[in-house]
Length: 95
Image 1 (tube, rainbow, N blue to C red):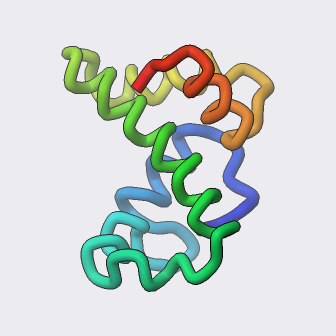
Image 2: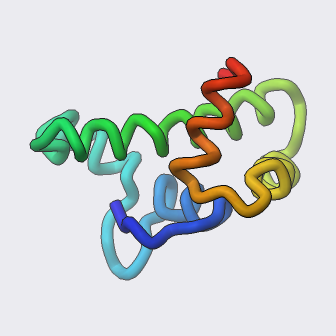
């Protein structure tokens, strides 16, 4: 996963399509399971990003189109980092 991703749109793209000629996180997860997360720090980093992805998925499951769900999430993220947004979502029990 790329550390410098700062928007939900970029995170969604990295997760589902891959970026910079790297495979998607979704592909890596289905292929290698947890082997790609070799340390506790990497696992925490992954979990925080997954929380944001699951929030977008929840919005989509509630009937919001994917692009609108991503835009809504980025608007809610405001000036927070992806990590900060994940922590904020957890504090609100959104997922």
